[in-house]
Image (cartoon, rainbow, N blue to C red; front, side, top):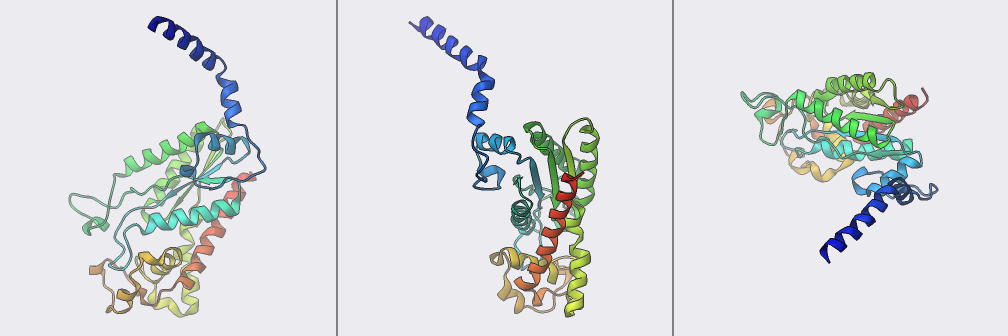
Length: 279
């Protein structure tokens, strides 16, 4: 009886795999008239993702965050929450785009001796080469599935060179394919340049610093105010580097100020994506 069952099962499995292409196609086939219920890659099934790709949704954003101290008033997941939310808005505005799970582990300094943000509790670091291999492997995972434009946006300043490097390497590897990698430098660069200039022009020049300042705190308030200890901040004294606040003063931060910077980031990223698609 057992042998007969196995024989029948073998026939069944053989038939299934013999018609694998047809089965796969039938499962993936769906109407292209409806947009995905979510732009988040991780909230879709494999059949839905395959359907998205078949319907021309072939741009994918890899949002890179980081887990680090940002002074005593901003939660350590700042970069992760911020880049994921903004990536979704970019995807919705650019269209035909999905958003990969956020990369939360990035280079943040040495553990022995403890350097940079690793001097503070709440920070997680990985070696630069490990980070670059992770990013490259993730991009290749999406490329073999059928995504044609893999977009890197990084919310953490220390990762920008690595993202640029990986995108350049991937484009060399993909030179004979239809795929391309895009590092959106402008997503990050608008903050220390155009946005800081805007803040200065509106009377906040003395409040701008390098980290956990008025710009950083305002951006976070615009995305998720629950991650900012605003009451404690406003009652605090003058910020210091010992607190992990490097220059400037975040006490005048507001969601309204932050939304200006976020709009700049979204506009810059959407423009870069459109330019890459039109090449």
